[in-house]
Amino acid sequence: MKRILFICTGNTCRSPLAEGLAKKMAKDRGLSHEIESAGLSVFPDGANPHSITVAAEYGADLTQHRARPLTDTMLLQADKIYTMTRSQADFLKRIYPSGSEKIKTLCDQDVSDPYGGTEEDYRICAQQIWEGLQTRWEEDTWD
Image 1 (cartoon, rainbow, N blue to C red):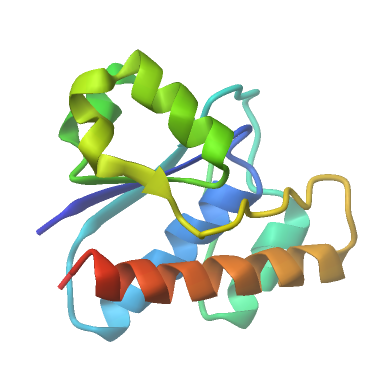
Image 2 (image 1 turned 120 degrees about the vertical axis):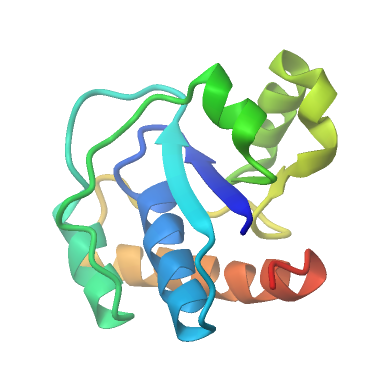
């Protein structure tokens, strides 16, 4: 079993989507990886309503999600850490240099932040995340 961690800014839009979609992918493949998400600048809140709607379109449930701040324990325990932007990955590598080999961006390009946008903005974001998950799953051999 692998521990996979997704990081974004507030842990209400992008990283919960990545967590939910990755859990769906793992379940569909019969795997029981521990998959979670956290944020770098978190206010207590649930997943954005648009994130919940769009995740459901992929068969993922974010209704129980609660934003969580990133902790040292999360960084230490994770086997793979994926950020939504290059600057987030660079920041984590600076504060956690011993784990820099397990930190990378989810996608080759930054995942656009849909916060404050329309439901369609969230669909575009989710599609980008879904494609990034498929690529990373194969490249980083999550199976």
